Amino acid sequence: MTVKFAISTVNLLGTYTEKMDHYDPIEAVILSFDDTGDALHLIILDMMYMSFRRCTKIRNQLGKSLGIQAEQIILHFTHTHTGPSADDMDEQALQTVLHNAIEENSEKSEAVEMAYTEIDSQGRWSVNRRKQMPHDMGKMTVWAGFEESSEGRLDATRIIKRRLKDWFGEEFNHPDFDGPFYYDEDERDSILQQLVFKNLQGELVGSLVRFACHPPIAGHTSRRRYSADFPGYVRRLLNEQFGGEHAYLTGPCGNIAPWEFGDWKEIPRSDRVANQPPMGPFTEEDASFKEAQRIAKEIVQSLSDAWPQTDAFELLESMASDLVPFDLQLRDDLLTNPEDVETESVAILQRLTENKDLSFAEYKRLADRYTFLDYHKDFAERGYLDEETIKKGSIEINIPAIRLNRIILQGMPGESFWESAELAQQSVKEKEFEFISFSFANGSIAYLPTDDERPNGDYEVCYCIAGEGAVTKLSQQLEINSLHMIEESFETRDT
Image (cartoon, rainbow, N blue to C red; front, side, top):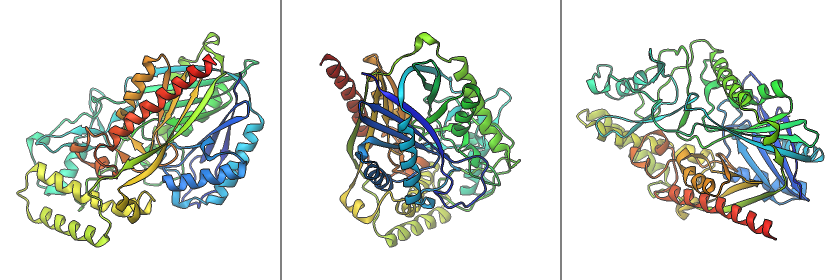
Protein backbone atom coordinates (compact mmCIF):
# COMPACT_ATOMS: atom_id res chain seq x y z
CA MET A 1 0.00 0.00 0.00
CA THR A 2 1.00 3.61 -0.51
CA VAL A 3 0.03 6.57 1.65
CA LYS A 4 -0.52 9.82 -0.21
CA PHE A 5 0.58 13.10 1.33
CA ALA A 6 0.18 16.83 0.78
CA ILE A 7 1.12 19.96 2.69
CA SER A 8 -0.09 23.55 2.25
CA THR A 9 0.17 26.88 4.03
CA VAL A 10 -2.79 29.25 4.30
CA ASN A 11 -2.93 32.80 5.66
CA LEU A 12 -5.41 33.21 8.53
CA LEU A 13 -5.98 36.92 7.93
CA GLY A 14 -9.72 37.58 8.20
CA THR A 15 -10.39 34.81 10.70
CA TYR A 16 -9.65 36.94 13.75
CA THR A 17 -10.22 40.46 15.04
CA GLU A 18 -7.05 42.43 14.44
CA LYS A 19 -5.95 44.24 17.60
CA MET A 20 -2.40 45.18 16.62
CA ASP A 21 -0.17 45.48 13.57
CA HIS A 22 1.47 42.50 11.87
CA TYR A 23 5.22 41.96 11.95
CA ASP A 24 4.91 38.72 9.97
CA PRO A 25 1.97 36.58 8.79
CA ILE A 26 -0.27 34.45 10.99
CA GLU A 27 -0.85 31.17 9.17
CA ALA A 28 -2.04 27.60 9.34
CA VAL A 29 -0.25 24.63 7.81
CA ILE A 30 -2.33 21.67 6.61
CA LEU A 31 -0.78 18.20 6.43
CA SER A 32 -3.05 15.64 4.77
CA PHE A 33 -2.43 11.90 4.74
CA ASP A 34 -4.58 9.52 2.69
CA ASP A 35 -4.35 5.75 3.05
CA THR A 36 -6.67 4.39 0.32
CA GLY A 37 -9.47 6.79 1.17
CA ASP A 38 -8.88 6.84 4.93
CA ALA A 39 -7.78 10.45 5.38
CA LEU A 40 -6.17 12.27 8.28
CA HIS A 41 -5.60 16.02 8.49
CA LEU A 42 -3.13 17.61 10.90
CA ILE A 43 -3.79 21.35 11.14
CA ILE A 44 -1.13 23.51 12.78
CA LEU A 45 -2.11 27.07 13.67
CA ASP A 46 -0.07 30.12 14.67
CA MET A 47 -2.03 30.64 17.87
CA MET A 48 -1.26 30.55 21.57
CA TYR A 49 -4.05 28.26 22.73
CA MET A 50 -7.69 27.20 22.42
CA SER A 51 -9.71 25.25 24.96
CA PHE A 52 -10.68 21.63 24.34
CA ARG A 53 -14.34 22.61 24.13
CA ARG A 54 -13.80 25.12 21.34
CA CYS A 55 -11.40 22.78 19.54
CA THR A 56 -13.93 19.97 19.70
CA LYS A 57 -16.63 22.27 18.34
CA ILE A 58 -14.45 23.36 15.42
CA ARG A 59 -13.32 19.80 14.68
CA ASN A 60 -16.93 18.60 14.72
CA GLN A 61 -18.01 21.41 12.38
CA LEU A 62 -15.12 20.74 10.02
CA GLY A 63 -15.79 17.02 10.00
CA LYS A 64 -19.44 17.60 9.18
CA SER A 65 -18.72 20.06 6.37
CA LEU A 66 -16.03 17.78 4.88
CA GLY A 67 -18.09 14.61 5.26
CA ILE A 68 -15.55 12.90 7.51
CA GLN A 69 -15.30 12.02 11.19
CA ALA A 70 -14.00 14.62 13.62
CA GLU A 71 -11.45 12.00 14.71
CA GLN A 72 -9.78 12.46 11.31
CA ILE A 73 -8.88 16.05 12.21
CA ILE A 74 -6.14 17.01 14.67
CA LEU A 75 -5.59 20.63 15.67
CA HIS A 76 -2.25 21.79 17.04
CA PHE A 77 -1.22 25.26 18.18
CA THR A 78 2.41 26.37 17.97
CA HIS A 79 1.74 28.44 21.13
CA THR A 80 3.21 31.62 19.70
CA HIS A 81 2.50 34.32 22.28
CA THR A 82 2.01 36.91 19.54
CA GLY A 83 -0.72 35.07 17.69
CA PRO A 84 -4.42 35.93 17.93
CA SER A 85 -6.15 34.80 21.10
CA ALA A 86 -8.92 32.22 21.04
CA ASP A 87 -11.46 34.89 21.98
CA ASP A 88 -10.52 36.94 18.92
CA MET A 89 -11.25 34.11 16.48
CA ASP A 90 -14.29 34.12 14.22
CA GLU A 91 -15.18 30.42 14.35
CA GLN A 92 -17.25 30.47 11.17
CA ALA A 93 -14.55 32.29 9.21
CA LEU A 94 -11.88 29.95 10.57
CA GLN A 95 -13.95 26.90 9.69
CA THR A 96 -14.48 28.19 6.13
CA VAL A 97 -10.78 28.90 5.58
CA LEU A 98 -9.72 25.53 6.98
CA HIS A 99 -12.44 23.65 5.06
CA ASN A 100 -11.31 25.15 1.75
CA ALA A 101 -7.64 24.64 2.58
CA ILE A 102 -8.16 20.97 3.44
CA GLU A 103 -10.12 20.34 0.24
CA GLU A 104 -7.50 22.05 -1.93
CA ASN A 105 -4.64 20.35 -0.12
CA SER A 106 -6.23 16.90 -0.46
CA GLU A 107 -6.54 17.32 -4.21
CA LYS A 108 -2.76 17.50 -4.61
CA SER A 109 -1.97 14.45 -2.45
CA GLU A 110 0.66 12.18 -3.96
CA ALA A 111 2.78 9.19 -3.08
CA VAL A 112 5.89 10.23 -1.18
CA GLU A 113 9.07 8.98 0.37
CA MET A 114 9.94 10.04 3.89
CA ALA A 115 13.16 10.43 5.90
CA TYR A 116 13.60 11.03 9.63
CA THR A 117 16.31 13.23 11.16
CA GLU A 118 17.13 13.69 14.85
CA ILE A 119 19.61 16.23 16.23
CA ASP A 120 20.59 16.79 19.85
CA SER A 121 20.85 20.56 20.23
CA GLN A 122 22.55 20.03 23.61
CA GLY A 123 20.41 22.74 25.14
CA ARG A 124 21.82 25.66 23.16
CA TRP A 125 18.38 27.08 22.25
CA SER A 126 16.43 26.37 25.42
CA VAL A 127 16.51 26.33 29.21
CA ASN A 128 14.59 24.53 31.93
CA ARG A 129 12.77 27.56 33.28
CA ARG A 130 12.18 26.16 36.80
CA LYS A 131 15.00 26.12 39.36
CA GLN A 132 15.25 25.09 43.01
CA MET A 133 15.65 27.98 45.46
CA PRO A 134 17.30 28.12 48.91
CA HIS A 135 15.43 27.86 52.24
CA ASP A 136 12.90 25.21 51.13
CA MET A 137 11.11 27.69 48.87
CA GLY A 138 10.61 25.17 46.12
CA LYS A 139 11.25 26.39 42.60
CA MET A 140 11.04 29.74 40.87
CA THR A 141 10.12 30.12 37.23
CA VAL A 142 12.09 32.48 35.01
CA TRP A 143 11.15 32.57 31.35
CA ALA A 144 13.02 35.64 30.08
CA GLY A 145 15.22 38.53 31.12
CA PHE A 146 18.31 36.48 31.87
CA GLU A 147 21.69 38.18 31.98
CA GLU A 148 24.59 36.60 30.13
CA SER A 149 27.58 35.88 32.33
CA SER A 150 31.17 36.24 31.15
CA GLU A 151 31.16 32.46 30.55
CA GLY A 152 28.05 32.67 28.36
CA ARG A 153 25.74 31.29 31.06
CA LEU A 154 22.15 32.45 31.64
CA ASP A 155 21.94 34.04 35.09
CA ALA A 156 18.51 34.88 36.55
CA THR A 157 19.72 36.58 39.74
CA ARG A 158 18.22 39.98 38.86
CA ILE A 159 14.81 38.40 38.18
CA ILE A 160 14.80 36.46 41.44
CA LYS A 161 15.96 39.47 43.46
CA ARG A 162 13.30 41.65 41.84
CA ARG A 163 10.58 39.25 42.93
CA LEU A 164 11.93 39.00 46.47
CA LYS A 165 12.13 42.79 46.74
CA ASP A 166 8.54 43.01 45.53
CA TRP A 167 7.66 40.65 48.36
CA PHE A 168 9.87 41.86 51.20
CA GLY A 169 10.67 45.46 50.28
CA GLU A 170 13.42 47.32 48.45
CA GLU A 171 15.72 46.92 51.42
CA PHE A 172 15.73 43.12 51.04
CA ASN A 173 19.22 41.67 51.08
CA HIS A 174 20.27 38.11 51.86
CA PRO A 175 23.58 36.44 50.94
CA ASP A 176 21.83 33.19 49.92
CA PHE A 177 20.13 35.07 47.09
CA ASP A 178 23.16 36.87 45.71
CA GLY A 179 23.44 34.25 42.99
CA PRO A 180 24.41 33.34 40.47
CA PHE A 181 21.28 31.35 39.58
CA TYR A 182 22.08 29.59 36.32
CA TYR A 183 19.03 28.28 34.47
CA ASP A 184 20.96 26.50 31.74
CA GLU A 185 22.17 23.54 33.79
CA ASP A 186 19.00 21.53 34.46
CA GLU A 187 17.65 18.83 32.15
CA ARG A 188 15.24 19.54 29.31
CA ASP A 189 14.17 17.97 26.03
CA SER A 190 16.71 19.38 23.58
CA ILE A 191 16.02 17.07 20.63
CA LEU A 192 15.32 18.68 17.25
CA GLN A 193 13.45 16.36 14.86
CA GLN A 194 12.38 16.55 11.25
CA LEU A 195 10.38 14.44 8.81
CA VAL A 196 11.28 15.26 5.21
CA PHE A 197 8.93 14.30 2.36
CA LYS A 198 9.73 14.10 -1.35
CA ASN A 199 7.65 12.75 -4.22
CA LEU A 200 8.56 9.73 -6.30
CA GLN A 201 10.22 11.99 -8.86
CA GLY A 202 12.69 13.06 -6.16
CA GLU A 203 11.25 16.57 -5.73
CA LEU A 204 10.96 17.99 -2.23
CA VAL A 205 7.35 18.26 -1.09
CA GLY A 206 8.05 19.64 2.39
CA SER A 207 8.88 18.76 5.96
CA LEU A 208 7.62 18.64 9.52
CA VAL A 209 9.95 20.04 12.20
CA ARG A 210 9.54 19.45 15.93
CA PHE A 211 11.27 21.15 18.86
CA ALA A 212 10.21 21.50 22.51
CA CYS A 213 10.39 25.13 23.56
CA HIS A 214 7.98 27.96 24.36
CA PRO A 215 7.85 30.50 21.49
CA PRO A 216 7.25 33.79 23.38
CA ILE A 217 10.27 35.75 22.13
CA ALA A 218 8.50 38.03 19.64
CA GLY A 219 6.29 39.35 22.42
CA HIS A 220 9.20 40.58 24.54
CA THR A 221 8.94 44.08 23.11
CA SER A 222 7.47 47.42 24.08
CA ARG A 223 5.52 47.40 20.80
CA ARG A 224 3.71 44.11 20.33
CA ARG A 225 2.77 42.95 16.84
CA TYR A 226 1.38 39.74 15.40
CA SER A 227 4.10 37.20 14.72
CA ALA A 228 4.47 33.44 14.35
CA ASP A 229 7.74 33.77 16.31
CA PHE A 230 10.61 31.38 15.61
CA PRO A 231 8.33 28.48 14.49
CA GLY A 232 7.13 30.70 11.64
CA TYR A 233 10.65 31.83 10.77
CA VAL A 234 11.84 28.21 10.70
CA ARG A 235 9.11 27.36 8.18
CA ARG A 236 9.87 30.29 5.91
CA LEU A 237 13.64 29.91 6.06
CA LEU A 238 13.32 26.25 5.07
CA ASN A 239 11.12 27.27 2.15
CA GLU A 240 13.66 29.88 1.03
CA GLN A 241 16.55 27.44 1.23
CA PHE A 242 15.00 24.20 0.00
CA GLY A 243 11.62 25.04 -1.52
CA GLY A 244 8.50 23.08 -0.56
CA GLU A 245 6.11 23.73 2.31
CA HIS A 246 7.11 23.25 5.94
CA ALA A 247 5.33 22.79 9.25
CA TYR A 248 6.45 23.14 12.86
CA LEU A 249 5.28 21.15 15.88
CA THR A 250 5.87 22.53 19.38
CA GLY A 251 6.97 19.71 21.65
CA PRO A 252 5.94 19.50 25.33
CA CYS A 253 7.38 22.74 26.67
CA GLY A 254 5.49 23.53 29.87
CA ASN A 255 8.80 23.95 31.69
CA ILE A 256 11.07 24.91 28.77
CA ALA A 257 11.85 28.49 27.70
CA PRO A 258 14.03 29.80 24.86
CA TRP A 259 17.66 30.73 25.42
CA GLU A 260 17.34 34.46 24.77
CA PHE A 261 20.17 36.95 24.61
CA GLY A 262 19.49 40.66 24.64
CA ASP A 263 19.62 44.09 26.22
CA TRP A 264 16.70 44.10 28.64
CA LYS A 265 14.91 47.12 30.05
CA GLU A 266 14.87 47.62 33.80
CA ILE A 267 12.31 45.37 35.48
CA PRO A 268 9.43 47.49 36.77
CA ARG A 269 8.59 47.29 40.45
CA SER A 270 5.35 45.47 41.26
CA ASP A 271 3.12 45.57 44.32
CA ARG A 272 1.78 42.12 43.52
CA VAL A 273 2.50 39.12 45.70
CA ALA A 274 1.40 36.73 42.97
CA ASN A 275 4.04 34.32 41.72
CA GLN A 276 4.50 35.65 38.22
CA PRO A 277 8.08 36.05 37.01
CA PRO A 278 8.83 39.78 36.61
CA MET A 279 10.30 40.80 33.28
CA GLY A 280 11.12 43.90 31.30
CA PRO A 281 11.06 43.78 27.47
CA PHE A 282 14.05 44.20 25.18
CA THR A 283 15.31 47.78 25.09
CA GLU A 284 15.00 48.06 21.31
CA GLU A 285 11.43 47.42 20.14
CA ASP A 286 12.35 45.19 17.18
CA ALA A 287 15.04 43.25 19.05
CA SER A 288 12.59 40.52 20.06
CA PHE A 289 11.81 39.67 16.44
CA LYS A 290 15.50 39.69 15.54
CA GLU A 291 16.24 37.34 18.44
CA ALA A 292 13.48 34.96 17.31
CA GLN A 293 15.00 35.04 13.82
CA ARG A 294 18.45 34.28 15.23
CA ILE A 295 17.21 31.12 16.91
CA ALA A 296 15.28 30.12 13.79
CA LYS A 297 18.38 30.57 11.61
CA GLU A 298 20.44 28.38 13.93
CA ILE A 299 17.74 25.69 13.93
CA VAL A 300 17.53 25.75 10.13
CA GLN A 301 21.32 25.62 9.83
CA SER A 302 21.37 22.50 12.02
CA LEU A 303 18.64 20.93 9.90
CA SER A 304 20.51 21.85 6.73
CA ASP A 305 23.73 20.30 8.02
CA ALA A 306 21.88 17.07 8.79
CA TRP A 307 19.68 17.04 5.67
CA PRO A 308 18.91 13.40 4.81
CA GLN A 309 20.72 11.76 1.93
CA THR A 310 18.87 9.88 -0.79
CA ASP A 311 19.36 6.47 0.81
CA ALA A 312 17.68 7.67 4.03
CA PHE A 313 14.28 7.94 2.34
CA GLU A 314 11.70 5.17 2.31
CA LEU A 315 8.27 4.91 0.78
CA LEU A 316 5.49 6.13 3.06
CA GLU A 317 3.39 3.00 2.86
CA SER A 318 1.70 2.61 6.22
CA MET A 319 -0.35 4.99 8.32
CA ALA A 320 -2.68 4.82 11.30
CA SER A 321 -4.26 7.28 13.70
CA ASP A 322 -6.01 7.07 17.02
CA LEU A 323 -7.98 9.38 19.29
CA VAL A 324 -8.29 8.14 22.87
CA PRO A 325 -10.66 9.79 25.36
CA PHE A 326 -9.10 10.59 28.71
CA ASP A 327 -10.83 11.64 31.91
CA LEU A 328 -8.55 14.17 33.59
CA GLN A 329 -9.17 14.40 37.32
CA LEU A 330 -9.28 17.95 38.69
CA ARG A 331 -7.49 19.24 41.77
CA ASP A 332 -9.68 19.18 44.86
CA ASP A 333 -8.94 22.74 46.01
CA LEU A 334 -10.72 24.50 43.13
CA LEU A 335 -13.43 26.88 44.35
CA THR A 336 -16.78 27.32 42.61
CA ASN A 337 -17.95 30.46 44.41
CA PRO A 338 -16.21 33.73 43.38
CA GLU A 339 -16.98 35.15 46.82
CA ASP A 340 -15.03 32.33 48.46
CA VAL A 341 -12.11 33.06 46.14
CA GLU A 342 -12.19 36.74 47.08
CA THR A 343 -12.50 36.07 50.81
CA GLU A 344 -9.52 33.72 50.93
CA SER A 345 -7.44 35.96 48.67
CA VAL A 346 -8.00 38.98 50.92
CA ALA A 347 -7.07 36.95 54.01
CA ILE A 348 -3.83 35.71 52.42
CA LEU A 349 -2.90 39.17 51.19
CA GLN A 350 -3.45 40.63 54.64
CA ARG A 351 -1.25 37.98 56.22
CA LEU A 352 1.51 38.50 53.67
CA THR A 353 1.54 42.27 54.09
CA GLU A 354 1.24 42.34 57.87
CA ASN A 355 3.41 39.38 58.91
CA LYS A 356 6.88 40.09 57.60
CA ASP A 357 8.32 37.53 60.03
CA LEU A 358 7.12 34.64 57.86
CA SER A 359 9.81 32.20 56.77
CA PHE A 360 10.81 32.16 53.11
CA ALA A 361 9.10 28.79 52.68
CA GLU A 362 5.84 29.91 54.32
CA TYR A 363 5.73 33.16 52.37
CA LYS A 364 6.28 31.29 49.11
CA ARG A 365 3.56 28.75 49.97
CA LEU A 366 1.04 31.52 50.67
CA ALA A 367 2.06 33.44 47.56
CA ASP A 368 1.51 30.28 45.51
CA ARG A 369 -1.95 29.87 46.97
CA TYR A 370 -2.78 33.51 46.32
CA THR A 371 -1.66 33.13 42.70
CA PHE A 372 -3.71 29.97 42.22
CA LEU A 373 -6.83 31.75 43.50
CA ASP A 374 -6.06 34.70 41.23
CA TYR A 375 -6.13 32.38 38.21
CA HIS A 376 -9.64 31.06 38.90
CA LYS A 377 -11.07 33.83 36.74
CA ASP A 378 -8.66 32.94 33.94
CA PHE A 379 -9.63 29.26 34.12
CA ALA A 380 -13.24 30.25 33.47
CA GLU A 381 -12.60 32.93 30.84
CA ARG A 382 -10.37 30.66 28.77
CA GLY A 383 -13.01 27.93 28.78
CA TYR A 384 -11.03 25.42 30.81
CA LEU A 385 -13.54 25.17 33.64
CA ASP A 386 -17.07 25.95 34.68
CA GLU A 387 -18.96 25.33 37.90
CA GLU A 388 -20.50 22.08 36.64
CA THR A 389 -17.12 20.66 35.64
CA ILE A 390 -15.60 21.54 39.01
CA LYS A 391 -18.46 19.81 40.82
CA LYS A 392 -18.03 16.76 38.59
CA GLY A 393 -14.35 16.64 39.53
CA SER A 394 -13.01 15.78 36.09
CA ILE A 395 -12.87 16.97 32.51
CA GLU A 396 -12.91 14.76 29.42
CA ILE A 397 -10.15 15.46 26.94
CA ASN A 398 -8.67 13.35 24.15
CA ILE A 399 -5.21 12.19 23.17
CA PRO A 400 -4.46 11.95 19.42
CA ALA A 401 -1.66 9.92 17.89
CA ILE A 402 -0.39 9.19 14.38
CA ARG A 403 1.79 6.39 13.06
CA LEU A 404 3.74 6.88 9.83
CA ASN A 405 5.66 3.70 8.97
CA ARG A 406 7.82 3.20 12.08
CA ILE A 407 7.35 6.68 13.51
CA ILE A 408 4.88 7.52 16.29
CA LEU A 409 3.67 11.11 16.59
CA GLN A 410 2.06 11.40 20.03
CA GLY A 411 -0.11 14.40 20.80
CA MET A 412 -0.27 15.73 24.35
CA PRO A 413 -2.79 18.10 25.95
CA GLY A 414 -2.17 21.68 27.00
CA GLU A 415 1.15 22.84 28.41
CA SER A 416 2.57 19.47 29.31
CA PHE A 417 6.00 19.14 30.88
CA TRP A 418 8.57 17.37 28.72
CA GLU A 419 9.10 14.64 31.33
CA SER A 420 5.53 13.39 30.78
CA ALA A 421 6.54 11.98 27.39
CA GLU A 422 9.63 10.14 28.64
CA LEU A 423 7.86 6.90 29.56
CA ALA A 424 6.22 6.56 26.16
CA GLN A 425 9.37 7.61 24.34
CA GLN A 426 11.49 5.01 26.10
CA SER A 427 9.00 2.21 25.40
CA VAL A 428 8.64 3.20 21.75
CA LYS A 429 12.41 3.35 21.27
CA GLU A 430 12.72 -0.14 22.77
CA LYS A 431 10.43 -1.35 19.98
CA GLU A 432 12.82 0.26 17.48
CA PHE A 433 10.30 2.92 16.45
CA GLU A 434 10.94 6.66 16.46
CA PHE A 435 8.91 8.90 18.75
CA ILE A 436 7.80 12.51 18.21
CA SER A 437 5.81 14.18 20.99
CA PHE A 438 3.92 17.45 20.60
CA SER A 439 1.78 19.51 22.94
CA PHE A 440 -1.37 21.65 22.49
CA ALA A 441 -3.00 18.75 20.63
CA ASN A 442 -6.75 19.28 20.13
CA GLY A 443 -6.89 21.86 22.89
CA SER A 444 -5.42 23.33 26.04
CA ILE A 445 -6.21 22.84 29.72
CA ALA A 446 -3.52 25.11 31.15
CA TYR A 447 -0.33 23.69 32.65
CA LEU A 448 0.21 20.02 33.44
CA PRO A 449 3.16 19.83 35.86
CA THR A 450 4.38 16.34 36.71
CA ASP A 451 3.52 14.99 40.14
CA ASP A 452 7.20 15.21 41.08
CA GLU A 453 7.09 18.95 40.38
CA ARG A 454 3.85 19.78 42.18
CA PRO A 455 5.44 20.18 45.66
CA ASN A 456 7.88 22.73 44.19
CA GLY A 457 5.04 25.14 43.47
CA ASP A 458 5.37 28.37 41.49
CA TYR A 459 3.79 29.60 38.29
CA GLU A 460 3.07 26.38 36.39
CA VAL A 461 1.70 24.62 39.48
CA CYS A 462 -0.47 27.64 40.31
CA TYR A 463 -1.80 27.81 36.75
CA CYS A 464 -2.98 24.20 36.83
CA ILE A 465 -6.39 22.54 37.16
CA ALA A 466 -5.20 18.90 37.10
CA GLY A 467 -5.42 16.95 40.33
CA GLU A 468 -2.63 15.13 42.11
CA GLY A 469 -1.82 11.89 40.27
CA ALA A 470 -3.63 12.96 37.09
CA VAL A 471 -0.49 13.69 35.08
CA THR A 472 1.12 10.41 36.13
CA LYS A 473 -1.95 8.61 34.75
CA LEU A 474 -1.73 10.73 31.61
CA SER A 475 1.91 9.77 31.13
CA GLN A 476 1.00 6.10 31.50
CA GLN A 477 -1.83 6.52 28.99
CA LEU A 478 0.56 8.03 26.46
CA GLU A 479 2.71 4.90 26.73
CA ILE A 480 -0.33 2.63 26.36
CA ASN A 481 -1.53 4.55 23.29
CA SER A 482 1.87 4.52 21.58
CA LEU A 483 2.48 0.83 22.20
CA HIS A 484 -1.04 0.00 21.01
CA MET A 485 -0.34 1.69 17.69
CA ILE A 486 2.87 -0.31 17.34
CA GLU A 487 1.08 -3.57 18.12
CA GLU A 488 -1.60 -2.76 15.55
CA SER A 489 1.07 -2.10 12.94
CA PHE A 490 2.50 -5.59 13.45
CA GLU A 491 -0.98 -7.13 13.24
CA THR A 492 -1.69 -5.25 10.01
CA ARG A 493 1.62 -6.35 8.52
CA ASP A 494 1.01 -9.99 9.47
CA THR A 495 -2.38 -10.00 7.77
